[in-house]
Length: 202
Ligand SMILES: C[S@@+](CC[C@H](N)C(=O)[O-])C[C@H]1O[C@@H](n2cnc3c(N)ncnc32)[C@H](O)[C@@H]1O
Image 1 (cartoon, rainbow, N blue to C red):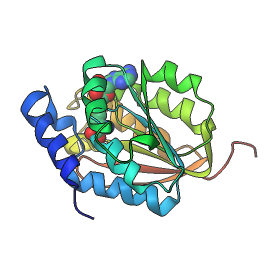
Image 2 (cartoon, helix red, strand yellow):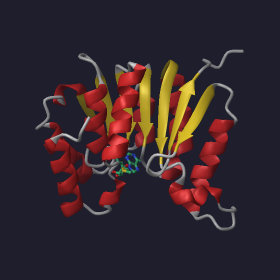
Image 3 (cartoon, rainbow, N blue to C red):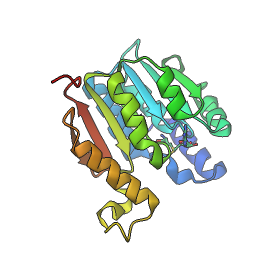
């Protein structure tokens, strides 16, 4: 499915007017996220890190009628930019933006969620995962972005910067968590697709 005109305008507007526009997911990852939402039959989705709303709108396209996506952003300017585009989308009714720090907002949500997309500050990923996992339905997906961090996760610890180290630690934690199975898809900067296979009781 091609990028819609609205998504193209949003992407171009982001690159023209917003600092660090490369944080936006891009058309390949957007299409992959939409397909993962649709393939998994997700009805309740949460995104951690809205930025300008690009991935939010792609994932909203993958939802069935009655589906909902909550999207969390702490930067008011980013949230306001995204809202201008959500307001122009016929899928706006599926989108519930939440302004605030991700950890506190996630703790205030009950779930259960069918799919979560983690794409905010990299040092927070482990905490977001810990709060999210009990809120996911069995079989639900947590998808974490930038887990290859330009390939730097494969460097030695001494060669890694903070972000690569956070990502390597996060991937290691997931690999060793018996409550989930996972695969890292080398799409863009790496998507760790994590599926909850146990509710944590032995
Ligand atoms: C990589 S961008 C998100 C990109 C977006 N998901 C997309 O695919 O186009 C990360 C966003 O997370 C936000 N953010 C960073 N730390 C956060 C936090 N602790 N709580 C909520 N949002 C945060 C940033 O302001 C930024 O807009």
